[in-house]
Length: 75
Image (tube, rainbow, N blue to C red; front, side, top):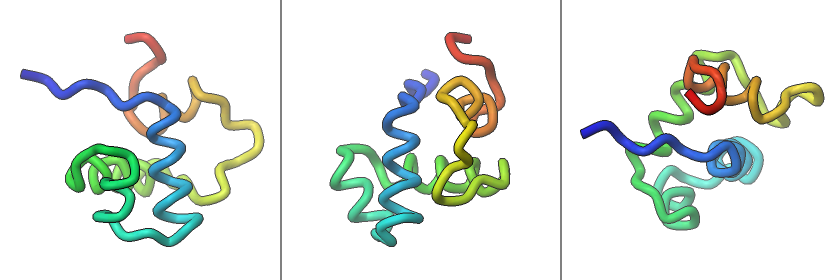
């Protein structure tokens, strides 16, 4: 069964808490109520997409989703 896709808000919060606030995977996962492996996977995808914190000013939710998940919003 495929995993449920993370909302853009959760992805943004993962990046903010991990890269901005320097929290551990465990702390981020506990704060957001998601698994450590989900946090880790999201961070790996963000690194592969060459994202950094703070996110670029012109990066809207649709573009963030495309860069992190490789798909268009709503697909």
